[in-house]
Length: 164
Image 1 (cartoon, rainbow, N blue to C red):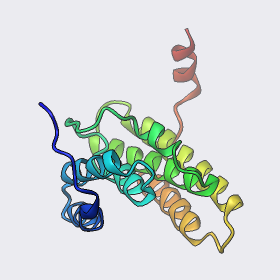
Image 2: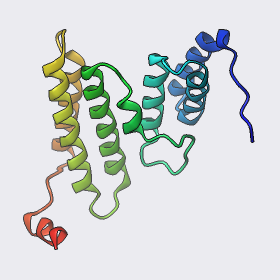
Image 3: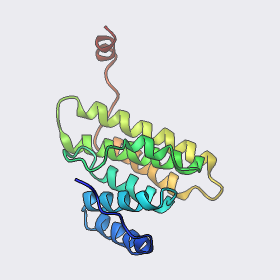
Image 4: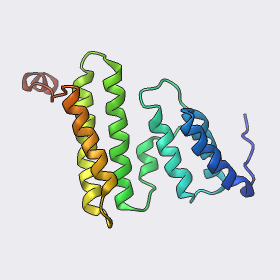
């Protein structure tokens, strides 16, 4: 099936729609709109960020709109700070999905995702040219999630089994 191209002059309105669909918890619609925008304006940073956020909105979800991996999209962001921040945000959302999942071992994976997110937020904080408020808030959120959900690293004996 051949996709219809988005007219270039429709990009600003399409960006508004993508943001709107994210707010409505319709990440697939937002993702699809961003893919259309990026087909006609591959350098559109706002569409790239909305796409990354939309893809992370359905972490753990079973459906797929894009062939892109979110990590590959993050690599396209020119700012070191934003790459660190959005990598952390995606890891945090994966951790949240694991907390909600309640499958065997998910608490260990959630802990690993959240501590990974925290290290990326620390990196973003070090790269920040401003107060680093966003990174600090996200780091604190991860710390609270770990504490309130009693998350912990995998036991040492379990790690030894994984290495065999």
